[in-house]
Amino acid sequence: MLCYFKLDGNLEEHSMNLAIPESVKIWSQFGHPILMWTLLGLSIYALYLGVQLRRIRTVDKEIRKELVKKQFNTKHYQVGSLILALMVLGTVGGMGVTYINNGKLFVGPHLLAGLGMTGLIAVSASLSPFMQKGNDLARYTHITLNVIILGLFTWQAFSGTDILLRIIARLP
Image 1 (cartoon, one colour):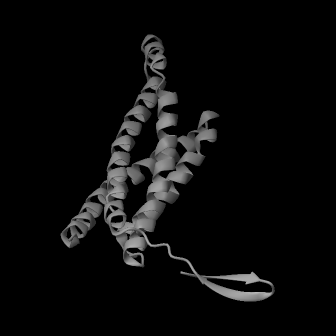
Image 2 (image 1 turned 30 degrees about the vertical axis):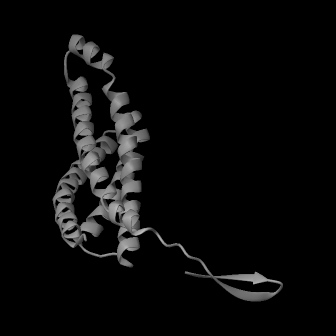
Image 3 (image 1 turned 135 degrees about the horizontal axis):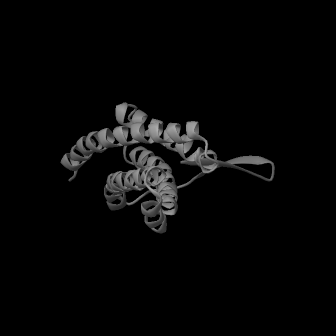
């Protein structure tokens, strides 16, 4: 990598060696898939929590009291926030590792779906303040987006596994 610095009015060229050890490059390729499979599991758990929240709205008063004590709303919000943060970091990290190891990104369905999911989850999370104020349109939009994300996520897990198997096949 070349960097240019202006010292004493003159532009000077300096070489920066950002060499990443080969072992780090190889093993870094496994972080993204591990994180994404973990996130898929967390997403299913968030779905469970969300279903419990919907259930609270429809059950009788006595059952509602018991369910409210379990704080599904707080857990759903916290798990959703964690998923949002890790999804964004996992997307950027996966792209970064791909670029570091290959010198380019492979623009294909896996990358495009992942970027789409990252955008959708940001929109879904942004609806939280409106849902807290009882906005049903925001709530149904949130549910719809998350069902779409979960479907894409499931597809991503399997297409990512194919990519991972190709990476493993190339290992020395």
